[in-house]
Image 1 (cartoon, protein in one colour):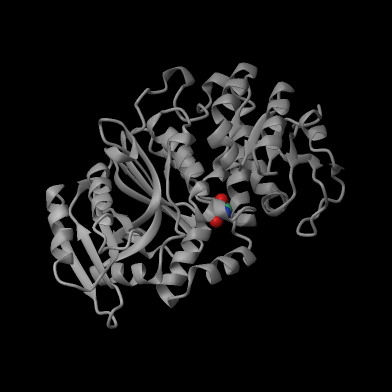
Image 2: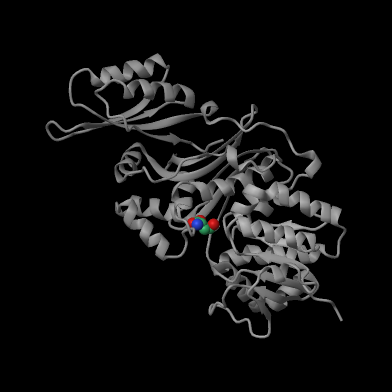
Length: 435
Ligand code: HSE
């Protein structure tokens, strides 16, 4: 008789119920891939979920009972959040369980601690479902692209934000109205500011960058800007210049250090990422050997995220018959060989910019603005001035050539002091994504 791999699941929400469903639906194929059947022996959840059938499976209302159960080999953490989830994982690791989790906030903020504990106890931690839902992006980076020096990553890694931007773009709809709809669709985080302010994307970028560059997880160093300030006017202006606005997570090795940044970005309409719409996610990775590559798919949802979670269960299930040290390291690089490459301050980043400002409609204002830009060596690539009603401020929109964030900050601060320009100046970084 072949011993099954015994799985305990903590959390039976959207992803938890999807995981139960996929494990049951594809039971035979999965067993053939692992070489042993996978059996769910224990579920910990505050309440049952009608979206899945758990007849015959032991259920506890206390999730810690699953983490301590001797009849569990792999603890699958799908409760979300950081505090209880961290406690739960450390408890399970102490009890010698392997870990599978889809919790991006937990890995980004506490991953270093969790990996150390797991390494000391000789157990695995797999977290494919934590980034870009069903897209196997971590395995692609850590294994499929392992031959490459990774140069940069640019990804649409928050479905809610992308849905909002797409609706603004295609239907000229306003931000607030679309956000409510995204929440109703069930994609938004429990706290939707995580989606709107870029926190969710920053969690995912932290994880991608560690696996790409072999650096420790450094969530606190990610520069973060959300989509809340974008207007339909910006979307239209970008369109006139031949660009789309996407909320991107960007990680780049400049040779001096690593850029880690999450912000709205103008990208040329013709690059593939510009056509990724709605709640879909996509990640573009440039490796020195492979060149540009693109990964596209559902970044959230019950079955798509379960696809990644179950793949991790299969991976750990296979590894249970191998020696621990022969497995793929948690972050793709061995823990004692992580790089000390610094993460760059946002002021050291160089990009082109889209700038929109409201100015008084009188002689000399535009000249003042261009004089200040020239002073900081900022060259203008294109410009639009929108007609205004009498006595109304005029909207001036510029695209610049590449300039450092530091110079742009200084120039905009000086422009804001002119008195003829409204202080709330919109700036969006531009990326050509052409290597
Ligand atoms: N709130 C996230 C998103 C869910 O919209 O992408 C998946 O991590």
